[in-house]
Amino acid sequence: MANMSIAQPSLRDHLKALEDQELLFRITKPVNPKYEAAALIKQAAKLKKAILFEKILASDHQAVANVVGSREMISIGLGLSSTDLLPELSNRIRSEFKTRLVKTGPVQEEVSDDPDLSKIPILSYFERDAAPYITAGTVVAKDPDSGFRNASFNRMMLKSSGKLGIRMMPPQHLGIIQSKSESKERQLDVAVVLGNHPAEMLASASTLPFGVDHLDYAGRLRGERLETVKCKTVDLEVPANAELVIEGEIEARVREEEGPFGEFMDYYVEKGSNHVLKVKSITHRSDYIFQALLCGSPEDLSILALSREMAVYTALKSGDFDVTDVSLMPFIFNAAFSMKKRFDGEPKNALLAAFGAYSWLKYCVAVDDDVNVQDLADVWWALATRSDPDRGLVHISEAMGFPRKDKLEIHRGKLGVDATVPMARREEFQRKKIPESEKVVLENYL
Image (tube, rainbow, N blue to C red):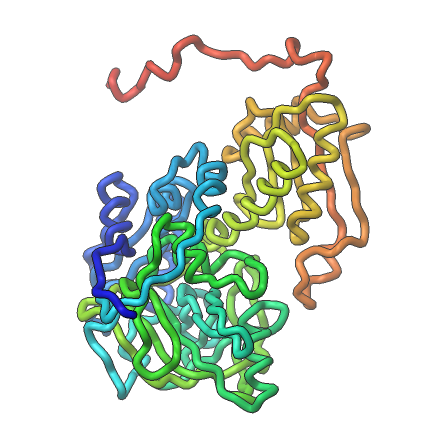
């Protein structure tokens, strides 16, 4: 039975928290949605700040990006510690939080049964992109057999006022679900949700076992049940406190040209034949904020990294390795983890466990727990001063890596590096330290 909505943290609450901590740029000047906004997003991302455009040309609505562009921003959104994020999150997601259906929510303040996508300030990002693209939309769909709800990020090309081109295919779960519906000659109901709280973003970017409900998982990330509302024209539920929802269906047996598009590896996916999403309705807050995402940016990679960091962290913990932290940044094909090793050779076993836990992993470095894996300079320091290329490498050839066909041949091998101190020489490798340096703050002397 539906309950009345109660206030629940939303994207807007997250933006306020970021602004309170001086992690948000407000841009008051009018900004062109074609390339100019993307250039500013890229610069804000380098400074590890979110960016809010108060005026997008030819639109009455604001736009925002880079809201989870760093581990600190993710931690703020989830209310967890940035230094102990993985262990704290590992404890939180053990609980079950089924979604709570409510009668109405801010995302349905306005409903359009004559939808016009051209009124939404959809951005154009890269010079060869075929059209403006929705990149931060999480696509919600139900498996036709079990009814579980999948949520995933899929790029969507603006084709007309009522149509989007959408990229999906197995083994991505949305592709599997669509294939099932298509085999039964059915259109697939979908809802594209924009303006999500960080928990819903992270849930949608997480690789979960097929059949695990992504909206329920968002509640586990939040630590409370996610409130949802029923869509107006499709048989789906969506987060009640989002900014905007595009309701529609993916047409069976219909493919159209889509692309090229600048993707997360900083290359272009060339044009190809992809699915078509026909829009049925648009619901939104009256003053909705459009959410954008620059593909390949720290925000894009951060949300992709977290669930995979959790997978590596969990596998190492389950293998009885005393791992303290894992990082897949700045790019998710590479990783570093810190550990308290008990014997020489143990890091090599841990490296093998990490490769087994996450198949896309290409390079992995094991370091001691006095190395900060969130600081790439510190990892490189450990590589330079502690690793032995003659004895510290783990090389695996012809293994499964990133599975996309056009890049498959260069993602087969794997290399692990033990950059930990030899057990017998720990005293010799003790890092130098300035006593009580954490109490001395430069700003207090200026």
